[in-house]
Length: 434
Image (cartoon, rainbow, N blue to C red; front, side, top):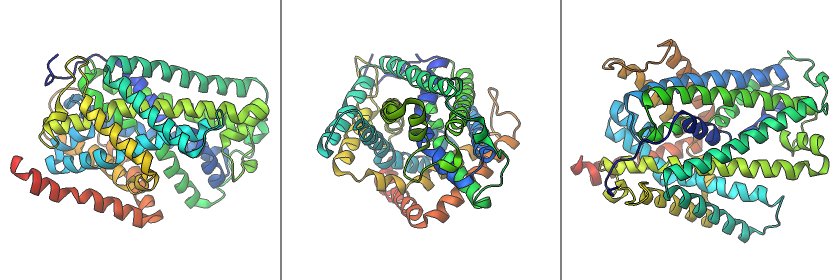
């Protein structure tokens, strides 16, 4: 393959489903239910929030499915923003992804995995950083050696991850360790009123975060107009079922009123299921889950920088493929390098917090593009129940944006300011080329 060639379409439906499910289900399902449970104090509201966010996520995914079918190229949201809202907007999205978000998330997952790994293997602070860096280098290198190799390893890890979670759910329910009385009263009013439900919605929103990332691989999915809509629908349906079932088994094992302030739901449920070894068991599950998610980010994220380079919005050399492996190796190395730097400096957690608002805004802006696209759209997949589907997604997403801004206006402002700082770069440095 020539270094400047195109990505090969080599992934089928189930690879795309695995990418979506494996990337989304990270630590959120283990950490989020405890905060939601303490906020709403009711099994009904806890499960309803998961179902509502599942429906909202599916509505957004159906919008993305139409965009992916119309523009089946590597890059995902970057490509859709470019085609609908223009190159400057797309550049700002890529600017945020390249410099902050993707390396920051990669560093977060690497360090997060090592923090849970200490429950299994004693590691000091320096050793944790070294292990985290090693994970980035190993997983990134696997993805450079071949997209199919990386995808096959990823699928195997995802099957193990989801299979383990399903076994935990079945073992919890069928083993008779819990009490069905824990679900009573089922329809109790939220302990904190409407504000508690609103807070639960925001927590659940981020547990579903990342579902849009699979569209970055559109340039490598076979028959994308057919397979991506199916993958998005099947993947989000599976995630929603797993989230509802996991929260249900947690409540079956541990009454909501006994959720400790200093423990996750998963840790308490693990103690019920496995006794003193419960913490180690769930630590191992979390480590595996985080590694799979980090693997996915190192696979899909470089496709954005690759697309930017092909458009002349990043160094042209990063738009070239490895002559032997056919992967965007230079774009992958950029993400790996920046992530390693963030692990060494330890600044990634605060930096990531600044960009929650902007990320949600870009996702909403991308989905909103479907209204503009419909004016010129040709044949192909179309979002069902239009315009109700995108409107529902935008209303819920707008509410989440408002909640994020109200909870941390300073961080939201800083994130917006950093993204807008990319405008001078675009117009002064790149403007003459575009």
